[in-house]
View 1 (cartoon, rainbow, N blue to C red):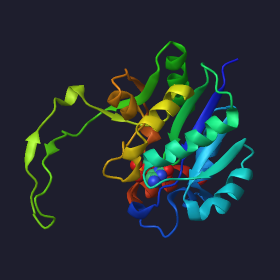
View 2 (view 1 turned 60 degrees about the vertical axis):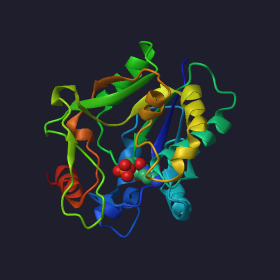
View 3 (view 1 turned 60 degrees about the horizontal axis):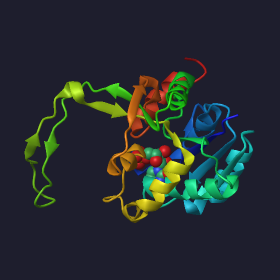
View 4 (view 1 turned 120 degrees about the vertical axis):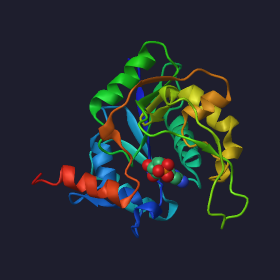
Length: 242
Ligand code: C5P
């Protein structure tokens, strides 16, 4: 029986949301995002949640009330650092890690991800792929810009426009083999120390190591709650009277 573990990243601050509490504790329809995210997970062997270090106890009581086998670990200064801390804790907990242990890394900020997305990621892993990410086509034209020479500069200089047909917006859960992801997080640990050098998703560690990554279809309802508008949409969709 293959074991399935989940890392739920929930150590974000919620600054862009404009709330005075960690994003994962912000309520939607009177329930914290963390609870929605935990309830939306597929059945699995164990969940490790990364939490803002100062809020660890609060997160632990939230997690304990959800009936999911889970532990809370203090997150890092970047998403990559938070995942690395959770993976390290997971590896210690499940010792010895088996060759076929699978792990899904999922953002608590995507609490309404449908079960079918989890299923597609796990199915692709079971089909023999080693790194699997859910993807959506992009509707905007995406441009690459050069860094501003001065923070007050009102314009940015465009340097490229990649062909939109080749671009994808990447979501979570992202699926991997636990022993491989753990090794890559150890290898690239130094980059995780600052937001500016950290990888913004886990598949990027595979790409940096020249290992293949594949996509499966994502889903619009797995959107990441980032701005007040995202929160208003979630409230509208999930309030009991809707
Ligand atoms: O900041 P961003 O929107 O990319 O965050 C994506 C996910 O990573 C969120 O679920 C957030 O809680 C998590 N995160 C984290 N540790 C950080 C920063 C973000 O666990 N230091």
